[in-house]
Image (cartoon, rainbow, N blue to C red; front, side, top):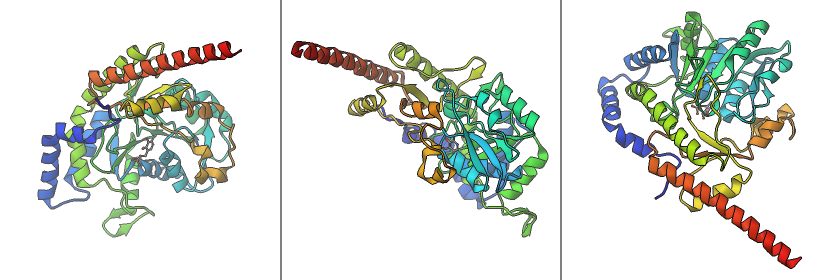
Length: 382
Ligand SMILES: Cc1ncc(COP(=O)(O)O)c(C=O)c1O
């Protein structure tokens, strides 16, 4: 039996009735941009989050851009962020003209090491972007204190953490803004691109809805310089149809993670769930000193894996102009050589989890026996 990394087709087949109903309703309506479906999804999503306001937009990348732009982040400013993230976090910062300033991570959680943030603050710093990577929130309490002390905007990158919590607070409700991606494979995914921004302040929301629609206050009246970044009616309807299932899907992700954790205990380094945080396992990421060989072995056994992410942002060609050299972020650079994401989505069965666990166990047994036989060969030669 093969275990694919993801299975969007299975997802569609499982929720075909809900998705088809939503799509047909929009097709029949004759209204495809900025209509009642978006309004309803925004109202439902802000209630679901417990945030004051939520605005749809075209992608997670633009959600980050729009939030930074709404807060006035612009050319010459600095934004503190990790390099261990999906590069779009950094693209969005660059879109404002601001400079990303990288901090290292905690190698166990793979999240921003908040103890390293304050020393990076300069008179040019305008914002901090904690990335709730893999489905777990960053340690928010110390960051909130730092942001308040230095009067900095705090934007949570929630692209991978829809439904995650920190001491009971939901991702996207603790900072000034939260940015969500509705890329199809996310914990809440569209059937195309989509994004959303949460905020607790009405004036922020008003600014966001202008910015995403060419800066218009009303048709053909442009108050500010904006862009086109709208969540279309089709995607809004599809997201609205799926929102009631997200808690149930996140619970299934947590069950799968628990099964992996138990089966892989003592074999590889499994993900850490910090006390007081609810991890929603957008990704289930193990760490191994033999990552590349393990990945090859799993491919041979029909198990799909990915690496999130193999090349950190500060060492990407595109960001060479920032001047970071290898060694600048030691924990990030160590972790990217060890991480491996295993199949994780609500449709993964217990049987599939067990196949993956067995395959990893077999890899390590074979590795051990090949090491001891090569030792024996070496000693018989000597
Ligand atoms: C952490 C993180 N931030 C931002 C993004 C960008 O989202 P999108 O692909 O919807 O633009 C992603 C998507 O991969 C992500 O994982």
